Image (cartoon, rainbow, N blue to C red):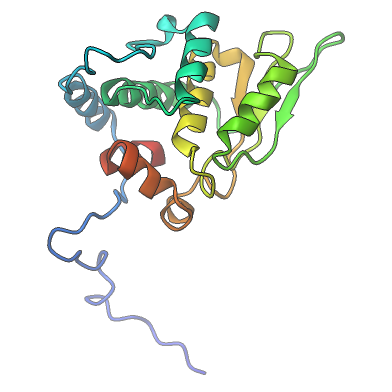
Length: 209
């Protein structure tokens, strides 16, 4: 079979989306884009007066008690306010950009590393494991070995908890990227839809970044 080059006009750019259809962002976020998105997030409505979960404005807000409050709140179906969720994701983007693509972690004598396999949105499994392992610390860091989301219906709760643990103390929580840390997988296996249902699809674009 003879392979022929594609017509340049036919291959220039992605096909146009149908009118009114959502399309994922396919370009990286520049520094100016992220600043503008943070400014936009800060204009979001405050939660209702009866909101009972923790609030997030910056990484230093997070303590062990804050994380426990988040877990207790999430397991009853509570969600962080939309503004807070955006700020968590924007802050984790900044944190991860400050780290190398290939991390190196030394486990010294008397210390231990807890490695988590595929979580796939199974929030209550995560809580059970944390009940056995305790929370991460400098002497007991955690490595989450990819595939945090998709398939399970609590992916938002899983990934926001992981991000908040990382933001509390970046040197105690590490992430490897799996094949579900990818836009195409998230569109097929549920995370995009879950994000759109619980928040909005603009937040999904930030998760993809």
